[in-house]
Length: 362
Image 1: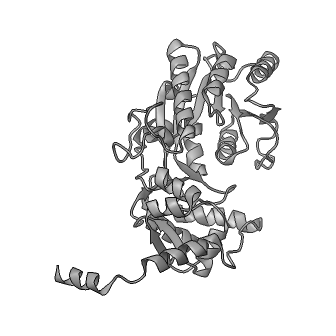
Image 2: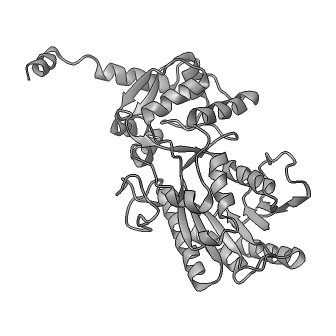
């Protein structure tokens, strides 16, 4: 089977490439060539590369037409980097009516996001049939979620017309070797040093909000299971972690994987974080404070998806990768993070005596 990955060097797409090559696919990566590949020679002659900018839509379409004329079509196209409607319209034009070496109409597997679902969630856990709203309702991460939702609609319409076959995978938080770990106030690696040295760390709210993370090896399993899968055409799937964690537990497992003591968690209300550290706080308000857990039954049934890498093990592997490259920053010296904690603890202080006695009497 001949598969094109638009992207191919990112966190998820690298794992997808490895899995497809191991399964015997001929894989072509299309990207700008600005990010170093982490495939380390995998695939040999079955791995090819095309260099170009997919956002230059006319050139992108002409380049792929020339490639297909010279080397044949693609059975499957995995689009990892379509973010706006013109990107989706372009990939549909490039493959409209095209057929791959296996004879079937080209399938486009689109990497979407769970941020197409409005927040707060209307159902928890969120199923694949939850209505997606393109306009008029705030979505997580604003323009990103709306753009992905609009791309989905374009691909579904193209599938319905018979221009291409389309499969949508709505990916939740994927992590793994190749990128720093996410934490409530960012993704800087100094956070790892905080955990290792026992420095206090912030968790938004009371830490009982639910979150699910999925290692990229398991995320890639869903993409590989969708590629060339007729059952998956015309369908949308959630691809999300199945180990549902509170943010308190997420932080505890992160600390354990880092080799640190039990974390010294400081809870700060989300609305306070929005005012105190607007950029980091906004992420908590828009996304992290909500229960972001998802039904994955359809992906398990049709794509062979499942979570095999426990979160603590996945974090340990990710940190080992970062450590080997010397990418863990130190958390020494006073930072904005320390000042935030000191300010909050000083502002809260000890409740007045009359409140303490009123609570006892009440």
